[in-house]
Length: 345
Image (cartoon, rainbow, N blue to C red):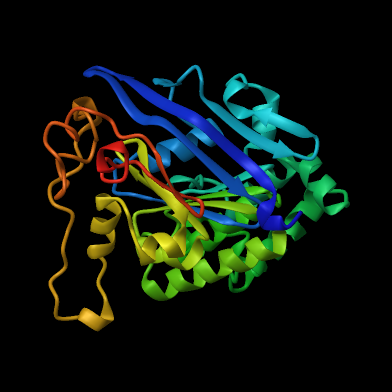
């Protein structure tokens, strides 16, 4: 079986709600996704679409006021057998082994993820020793504190950190933004995870550093054969890094399929709007066309299709009343829009 054909992660009917003072907020509304070894699945959408909540649910890193729907399933396929992450107790040892072991995560803001009172090396070494059993199985070598430090230095060097033997003993505030992001990638990859979740890892970086980070992640993915979930609002980044993509809007997936096909011929009006908002060199004098309006609050979720309040092609009496279901477009593509469902026939 080819690396890209080996199923690693299945998300089935994932629903996430939050209990707030204003009522129940439904952030993720029954989504299903798959990630394959050696491949990248991009998840794209505006802020508030539910991308980060969905992927943090995979790690079970949601706050105490969050709950998963009873039918939610998060299946991780390992050599030892399949495990449903959604069914694991929140404080179980198995869940702790998965976080940072089988599954690594690069957070959006490294300064919020590194402790300011410990050196970068101290935090990397603790992560390596916490998951030493997993790493020893992966690499076939034993780890103590000294060997963990050497492994951390090698990983810092691997991600392009200058003078890693000096940087490992520095505190996060002593590093530049690009260095901190490289250090965060080194932490996430230091245990050789099977799945890497990258939550907008290049948003705060300038374009030169961003390109370097993306190239680095693709190179390391090929080397380690891991699957990657890449979350972003930037369709340009998705086009560069992901073989497959899913477009999210207000907690639902509105379109999915091979990235090149969707970018070449987007089906859902929301996907078309996101692509129309991208600047292009061949039409430099053309004004950008933003998606009209704002994404609604989850507390005031529209009836019917969640995008109908902003859609230039909405059909009154249908889109504002009935939730569209997925329509198979062939070639691994699907779209949730009445323009392609039974109403269009």
